[in-house]
Length: 110
Image (cartoon, rainbow, N blue to C red; front, side, top):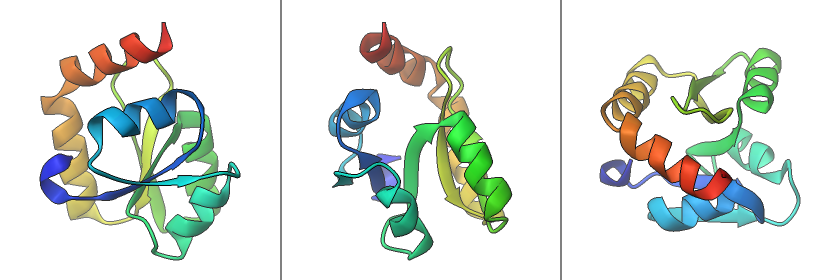
């Protein structure tokens, strides 16, 4: 993801923030959980790191958004605007970096 210089939204505290701090170059942190979703809707951030259940719920309610599961043993996903080219890029990055992503989540969730 670093090559795109995406602005990643994440709520403060927990594994999502630790992941973003370590591996994302440009993050915006939110004190109140849910605020990152409002920022995504407003176009203030590019993607959100969140639980896959939350991403699925959000993308069902807001059909111009989709989610890309992080291919790990965790239930995390990137939530992003519905854009086939952008989603293909994110999916390709996740697929190419599957071992790296799994290692990161294992380190911060076990």
